[in-house]
Image (cartoon, rainbow, N blue to C red; front, side):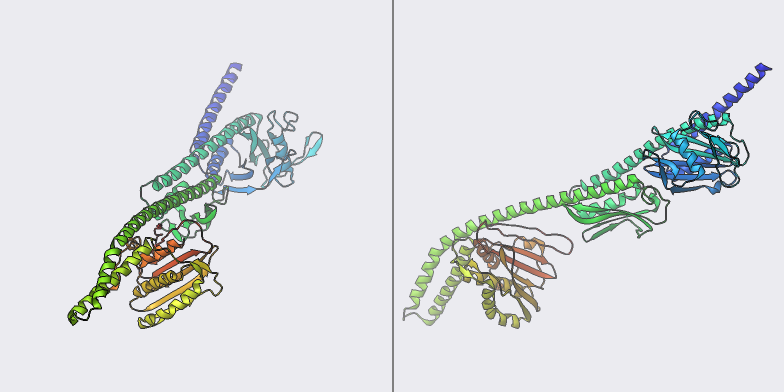
Length: 590
């Protein structure tokens, strides 16, 4: 008989071991999948309530100082719920998986977590678990009569703690309608399950962290790979980047993304404002330049930050930082390219200047001889009228050639300016007196915006007139069908500026790079020599200033001459061009 009882016990123990192993495998398998917290808790609750043979199960888990509570009824699997609750603090100040309300049940839960009565009361096991067979009756703990009222006529109650990463951060609360439902043998089994459950939470944390890290690295690597493509524009980088974002989030099928940078907006297909949103600002060189956004098109369950994981907060911040680095790198490359072009342009202008100076010197002597002899010949009374006309043509051509040589000398800075104190607003006012009638004939409205309090500069007055005339004449020629030409003077920090702006046909980018080169012109042969802007360049450079050019095809051009209030420093010329979509080039020389 005794042998038969032992055999039955052995069979029962073996069955129990098999069931426990099977349950453990299923629990760890769920943990391995790295499921979202809500889904994981739902599946775990379903497994446990079937295995533990009770009427209701409640799980409490404390993660990142947030207390999650979920539960389900045996008779109604659809009754599963999950919520966040305010946690209670232990005497040490640490959070524990007990509700922040003062009830009999929460008091016992705290005693279970603290191990206060472990093995010292018939209601507490040696490992700290609590069980009672009839909650309708009072019971004695430590010489004190206690009660524990629970809802829905449940009579049997068991509370089993479990540790996550070495700390008691979870509770399994089992309830049954029948009295004395949880035997000592069952409690031992539940405690073993609790250990497995604690291990599974730790394992799941590691799996979730790993999967989120993989998604983060995949997303960031994809963005970096796109940015590394030779010659790719910032617009293409951002459009590719925004399409890489949704797969990095927990619900990619419901996620849309948007990246805003300066005035540009880049979105995934089907983007809308959504009902739940996560964002991170883009700061480049210390300035806020834009924002990265992820939105869900439908409401998702709450996690760490609304429906978003804390790892997703770290990811979106990392993406914003990566985009900021790409912006800074791209802008540095563009600045480097611009400076390189400035140096090339400066070298070209310097070479042309040296050539122009040499040519001017070589031409001066023969031109002087031609002009002198033609004028001497005209003084003779014995020359036929036709010959006089021919000699006059020679004289006029020589004078024209000499004017070109003079302009070349100015461009090459071989003719030093005669500097004096000059008020740029006065120069403009006087110069426009002679240009107003020409503007009127061309149907152009001349707009003056002159600063009456402009400080004087040290400059050659006649050369300032030349700068004004050349720029205004260019503006008139750029608006053949009439329009507006505005002339502005203003004061900067350490400079005064002359700005001539028109609303004409503008300058194409490939032309803009050549406008300061001598003899370069897009006009007809009888409309100019191609030296006007070269002369402006030479004069401004000789005055240690520079020129900024902004032009948009079809919208007009703006030339801004900046001259120092106090002389000093090297001369330079800058250009900047911008069409409707992109920054143009800066070049410099002198």
